[in-house]
Image (cartoon, rainbow, N blue to C red; front, top):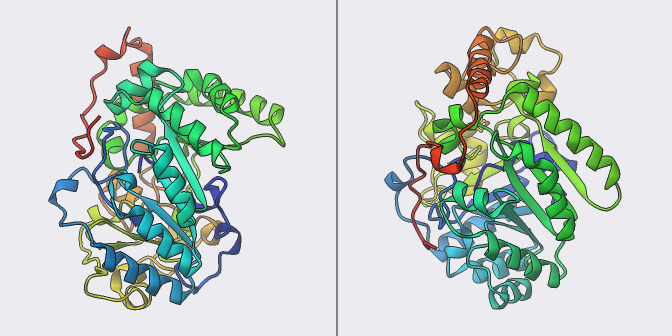
Length: 393
Ligand code: FES
């Protein structure tokens, strides 16, 4: 889980759910975070920074029961994510079971651990879709940002995915160190024969929140990159779809995070904690339910955690009176908490928010940092290191 779009309508190449959003319906989209273990240590990863404090991973049978209960409610899409889901030895078994239940299955991976043999086994098990992450188009930056030597392997994995007839879906998290290379990233995706490329501007949660000052580009850098992206979007129309995930700090527009709290999206963390989004477990004052002790129907319909910010009643007066409230669903609760200290607050990226000044301050700091000059090499960059463990390269 390196930090993909929080707007499910943007999930590239695998969006049957997004087009069928219905209020009061089931958790159409189930995201199974099979493990927090990861061979990569991306400095913008959205996984919890205190991942080691969370309990044991669910066993195979509990995952299967969770899939079954969600499917019985009407879930249609199952994302298999992490950490690195390939570190689970039962991945093929889980995919086969989900396929049998009728899920559309989607593997979200760094590619580390995906051999030809394993890819074929996943295909045979019925896996529908693979999303592969890259950190950059250059080996130096890719390997530096993930603290691994994985660039060459990812290129091999891309070929394997293509050879098995999967649509090629690439994801790259964007920030100040790779935005200048955005055209090279697009060209790399094109050369690989990608059908979809998600250019996911960093959203600041987890490790990315810790490293926000280092990662944040200036508004000018973002606008310049977006203009280049638009040129390539037009050039590649009909061949490759490019998704530019809105940098919401700069666009000053609240994103419809998770298409609304408890609306379509259910995350189950490695230890079984059920969450309305990837980051919610750091919110104070919640007692998140666990699939080990409650069934999915109870969690989804009756738990306080899933009802707390459902619909519009909980919204501040600013959001209540806004004509966008049914469109952006009040933006992102986790962002509101991280920036303002209150999960109930209006999403601070919104110009109507009384806390918008905090976002502008962060943007001014990014400009000041850019004016001070970029470091000459990756060795001079100082990040809070992501301490993820498991399947080391
Ligand atoms: Fe947006 Fe949690 S990440 S609500």
